Length: 154
Image 1: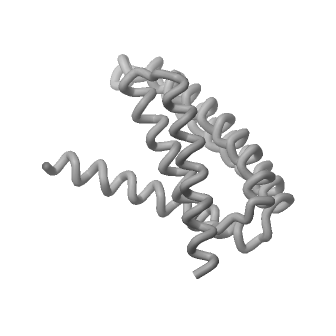
Image 2: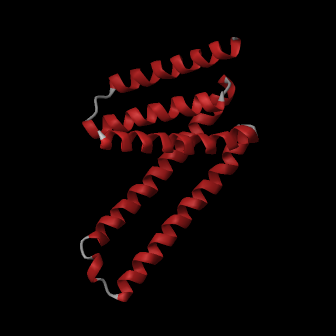
């Protein structure tokens, strides 16, 4: 019972903080949606990892740094996709090679970032919680995709 109360208190505290951040910074529709998803991600991960206060204080700055770097890489990748999108069907072999090589390089950079932060996560959390983090991220992604699919079907 005590553990459940602690988890509820932690979620309430995080929700309160996130609500204050959201209210303090008005956002556009797309930014607002992204903020909502991030709040949901934080609550989901916090609940799944059952972080102690000390763990949370060490973990969240590292995780946020990781997410920021990952988001920047993915944004750069999207810009590259836009560049190639228009004339993709009429590319030369050289352009297809450049595109395919850039895709592999981009994926490798993302993997290198994940490996770097894997070490950092192990430095701030017990290994079981690091493993739970990866599982929680995948579960969260699946739940978002399922929700989007259901919304699309309606």
